[in-house]
Length: 564
Image (cartoon, rainbow, N blue to C red; front, side, top):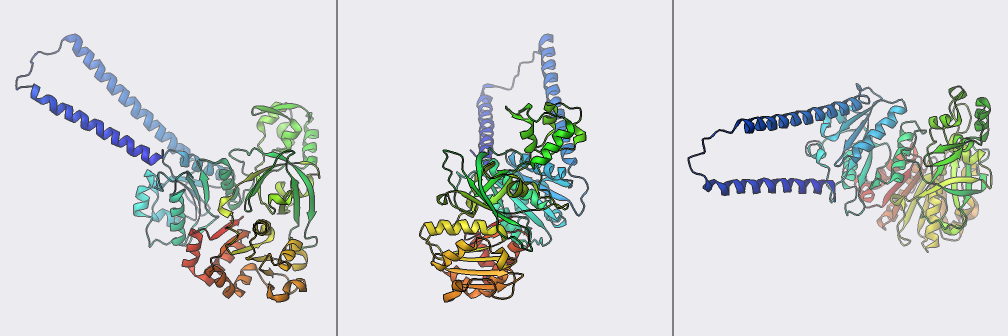
């Protein structure tokens, strides 16, 4: 039962009881005449009545005091993250029916605060057009009740603020939409807010994140995007994933000598005896580990025995293994502590997300990831683990997360795939899935720096093009001359072209073809970088097709993105 329907039923029951009591009182009136019994109550009865009245007043006062203390405590809790606004503030707005959205909003604000930012937590009932116009970055955590209704606290905001005419061109925002997939209008209020903000000219920090009944995997996805948008990718997970032990089967660098960061292809084998299934568009969540030499150095500096077993939740682990999965403190903070005391101080590493480049029928799970470097030149934790530190044959903690918002259409529907960089991973999986299902009307537009170095997964793509499984290929390389770097056989018959610039430039160059495909019912899937590529592609689509057409496609599920 939804929160809104439960509230309405409770109010109806209260009204029914009051009406019944009034009816009973009226029915008893004829039993009385104008002469009332004049006898006063006895002393004992009087004192009893006085004590009862005093007890009632004391209980009422205590309840009121408790409520006021709770309100002050909530205000104090929120005041810690609602100091005076400045240009760097993040506004975290909750629209909650049963308290779940408030809980997630508080966790969001706490995460931002731990990253050194200054979030402000507000209920949606206190929000108006003026406060939104003054804000720069707003995160909405919005519940949907019943069959697509807004939660009760949002009623005033919906009535007075969510209307046509408001302009919010300077606002960056994101929406965490809470709902129940068993209802037809799943996450409807969150989607209504997202659409209203877009119409008002606000720009999304990242695409809406849907959460079905508090799904922890979807919440981890929100945390991942939150960390990227806030420049704090090390924010801890609210609830860790339950990983399975996959095996690193093979690894190779795809773009040696590229002017960009190194890109590695990683092949993983599933746990023995398992048969994992996933669809193109789904996500691999991995549990990274620290470089082994960093763990050894810390253990040597503290003199702790790496094999010591320590309690972790309901189980046990060796101190070495726990350190490998945790943020490493300075050795000075741990000197003099025993192993269990050290374990109690450790914070687990957050998960990492990667698009899956393969389908189950290909015999393994393929990932493409760019090796990220810190300012000091050392590799990041996630990419460093998979690209450098994990050894072939070693265990990789991995969990597959369904991502239905980026699943493709049926094999008979034309499909336009647009992406750049390691975004080719998710697009390749869609091509493999469609080809296996007999679909052949697929068009890939891909952009990178250099055709010679950065045409990732070239062999698969050109083979599909040569065999007719890929109907059209357009490539854009920002560091190459026009038309350089593609095998001549692939250009025969006009099935492919290379453009200088970015993938959005290739879209503009092929605008007439794009209109024909869209008129034929094509779905557009975009995968790649959130900064630069995604907004550039969106702007090009709107120039070519018009804002109204792009919005219709987005609402109808014909324009989907997986950007990071």
